[in-house]
Image (cartoon, rainbow, N blue to C red):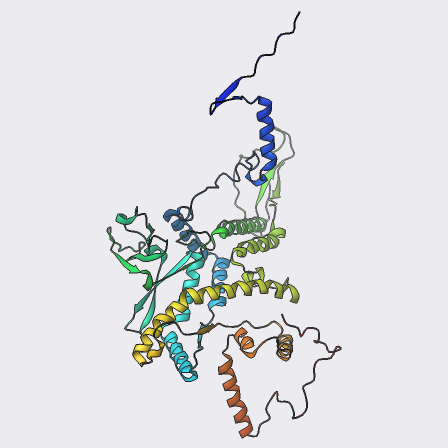
Length: 494
C-alpha cells in the first residue's frame, strides 16, 4: 500500500507572489521571539494590568485640561489651607527661595550710575512690595501650578517710577466661550504659528466670586505685558499643574492614619467594655437584653448581673509605628519639591552633622536653580520695563535699549558651624580658589558695598585710636593651620 502523498500547504498570494501561510507553531515561535525582544515594562500582564490602567498617550495640553487643572488646584489649595505640614512646606519653600527679596547689582563701566540705579531700584522695590509679591507667586506655583502678573502703571506707587506687578490668579486666565475651540489658543493663552504666547485672555472678575455675572467680560493682554511662570515638565506644555500634585494622595493618607491613631488612643482611654458569660446557653446566668447599653460613671463601683462578667475593650494601638510612618510619608511628600525631611518636618533630631549638610546641598542647589529661573523669567523682564521708565524720568537715556549687564543677589544661608566655614573660606582665598565677590555673593551681599563699608569702619577706628580687628602686624605673615590643629582638616572647600 502506497503512502499517501502529503497535502500541499495552503498558500497566500501577496503582491503577485505565492507565499505559504504560517503554521500555528510558527506564529507561537514568532510571539516568543517578540516577547524576548521587548521591554518588560511594556508588557501587560494580569499582575500589572490594573496598575497601568490609567496610563494614556495624551498631549501635554490635553493631559492638563481645564477640568483637570481646576480639580488639582482646588485640592492643592484645600491641603495647604487645612494641613499644617502642607502649609509649612510651601511657606518654607517660598521663604528660602525669595527671602527678603532680590538685590540688583548693575555692572556697567560707570560706578556712580550703578550705585544710583541700584539705590533707586531698591527704593522702588520697597514701595511696590516686590519681595512679598515674589513670595506670593512662588506659593502660587506650588499650589496652583503657575503664577500670572500683569505689568501695569500704578499711580499709587510712592516712587517716580510707577511700574508695578498686578498679580492675577490662574482661574481668571481662561478662554471665553467663543474662543474655546480656537486651534491657536490653549485655555486663555493665544499662540502664534511657532507656539509662542502672543496674548492672554483674562477675566475681569474671578469666577469664584459671588457677584460674578453669567456673561463675564474679558480683557486681552499682550504677552509683552504679562509675566507667566510655571514649570514646563513636557514639550508643548502651555499651562502648569500644581507642584504638589504627586503628594496630594499622600497628604490624605497621613491625615487618615493620624485620625486612626487618635481614635485608637481615645478608645483605649475610654472606660468602655462588653458583658460576657461563661455559662452555656439557657444556663444559670440571669437574663440580659442583647445589644443593650449601660451608661457608666467614672469613679463608681459597678455590679454585674448574675453569671456575667465585664471586660474592657482593648483596641489595637498603632502608635508604635506612627512616628516611623509619618517620617516616611513626609519624606515621600517633599521629594517632589527637592526638600529634605528635616526642613519639611522642622525636626533634625535624627540627623548628624554630615547627613544634615549632605541633604542640604541638594536642597540648596534646587534653590539656586529656582532663583536663576525667577531672575530670568520675572526679574529681568521687570528690570527692563523699570529701566525704560527710569531713563525717561531721570534723563539717563544711556539706559535705553538693551538690558545692561547686571546680576541679582539673594539671601545667603547661614552655616551650621560658622567657625569651620570661616576657616574653609580663608583657605580658599589663600589658595586663590575663590574670590571676594563669590564669597560675598554666597551670603547674598554685594562685595563692593561691603568693602566700602569696611573701609569706612577701618578709617573711623583708626581715627578714634581703636585697634583694627583682624589686622596682622607689619612684616608678620598670618600663621597657617598646622596638621595638629583641631579644625585643620575641616578647612577645605565644600
